[in-house]
Length: 325
Image (cartoon, rainbow, N blue to C red; front, side, top):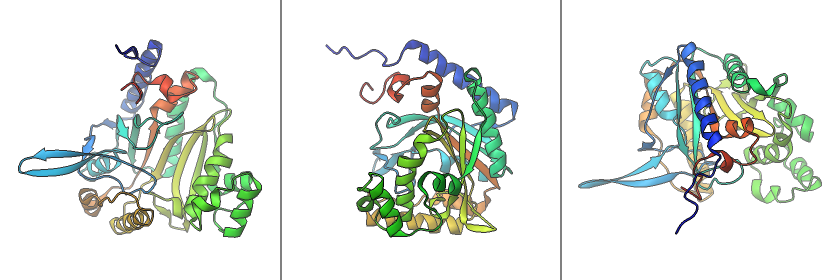
């Protein structure tokens, strides 16, 4: 007889989670941001080479369709924005394959919101207000904001906007990271991800919230590039106690540029032997019809709960993590 049927987390954490969700909903209601719901099961998945997805077969005789569990509600929410929804938010489940560990569960809870006519700085201000509300009992210190270039330079001595392979390789070998060269090769984006996660991120947000913004263009994802500095993406990430809490963009609204990036992602996926995926035609059609100028941010709520409850692992704040699901 199975003995692990009970929740993995303390029941007090179920109440803390409920309180957290109430606070978030109240926060956005006061700002007249509409709560929405979009499908978890979709006809298309994102093309990001850094994400693996779950797929399923939908049988609708006489046809069969391959469907995907969403890695993020981003595409569907942007279709709502293009249809005239105005500013929106969503609290939902998202799914990412091959992700399990101290800070990861394949199924997780995500808060994602989009603010029409907000630039990146306005989004950062709102994100800070939300975090301070949620951590009101934690006496957070002053929020710090750094450009990606200055924080990367200060921790590694390397300029992320001036890539020299031999310099990066020498740094990795001198700092006990000899595997970096084989993993990253001559791919700047991979080098930045690797070195940031190993040498920069662990020291961010020891006393409060840290926001890192102004990412190199190779890390733009779905963010627009600065008109006066096209090598810089209007992207921000949030960190606390060395943990990434959120990722946001001044959203790209150019359908031609977005499709070019999708094609680039697909080429990288093929190069690395990753699963084939198709571009989302409905999302691209929504962009072509006109996505309003907006900024958006996604925050992992399970990680927020970890910090609020001083829990060492994400499994400690989930009722039924993957090994008990």
